[in-house]
Image (cartoon, rainbow, N blue to C red; front, side, top):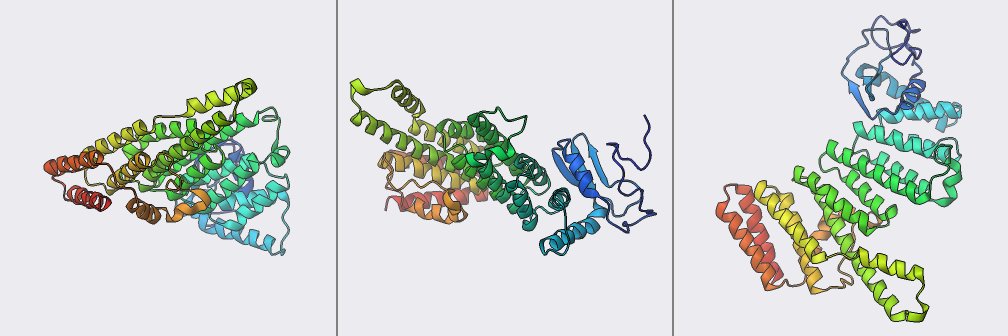
Amino acid sequence: MTRTSSQNALGLLNPLSQLNLPSGAPRKPPAFGSIFRALLSLSPNEIGLIPCPEARYNRSPIVLVENKLGVESWCVKFLLPYVHNKLLLYRTRKQWLNKDELIDVTCTLLLLNPDFTTAWNVRKELILSGTLNPIKDLHLGKLALTKFPKSPETWIHRRWVLQQLIQETSLPSFVTKGNSGTIPAERTQRLIQEEMEVCGEAAGRYPSNYNAWSHRIWVLQHLAKLDVKILLDELSSTKHWASMHVSDHSGFHYRQFLLKSLISQTVVDSSLLEQNHLRSEPALVLPKDEEAAASTEESRINLPHLLEEEVEFSTDLIDSYPGHETLWCHRRHVFYLQHHLSASPHLSHAMEVDGSNDCNKQGYSQETKRLKRTPAPDSVGLEMEHRFIDQVLSTCRNVEQARFANAYRKWLATLSQ
């Protein structure tokens, strides 16, 4: 089957075919929004710019190959100001756009510049009115993050959409034939899994992607509700990633969050178990209570062993990749957690979980202060750490590695003062 030059690979009418372009920019903007919308329906998984200084052929500058969406760079400098101005005219009530036009304009704008807050706000209004399925916005955001993995506005809007999805009052507005029979717990589990994948991809595209890791923490807190099993799964699944990104402070901070959350959740579970045991009477124990107690027992974990494994992981990384400050900072945090746990089993107020209310924007400096307030460690633990430092220094040929090891020794010395 042949196609005319005015059609693209999808059989869609080429928006440039009527513009008479020998070369250069079009004299009037083509209907890119409808093209983007049609392409998004095919679920592309990545977007990028195709280096192309000028329009050499009378064809669509939008290309889809194997689920990869490409935009020829020449058209961006003309298209972006056009859709930007069109949306601003709509917001100032100087130009009317129907709902489909709004979806097209905002989609085009956000794929080219996802940090344009007004466009996301318009899409929020469309979602609240029931015009736009929030799931589509999750996909749009996921696609934008492949090109702009650190985009703060995209992550912020993504959290807003997820909040709408998990609120029971908003469920009828996005129920479709495909998900009408979905059990809420299953839907939540699927959302969690999808968000972890999005965060992982974004973290891999941009080093120390604070926004991606912060979003991942938010998902654990608000969707997963700090479920112990999910926390353990995350600790296990991110281990390989951490070993391949030994300079990524944000990634290791995420592991510290997981460890602290596991400690906090385990302490809470233990307290509830003790209270239930004191209040319960043998004759009044119900089957559901027994199941809950059994579930709580299963969720209890060997925290000292878990932290010891993290210390061993830290040792292996420091030996294998000398001269990375991130690894030494991570070891400080794990040592801090170990000896807070041994000194105060209930961790009444010492264990603060980062990420609550976006407090972890100041997390690094606050963590450093907390590390200095750790209780005096036992002599055995200190001796093992000093032995490790001696072993590193005795075989070290890396100047930075020696500097970090000596800094760690000085930090340990301040704990016993």
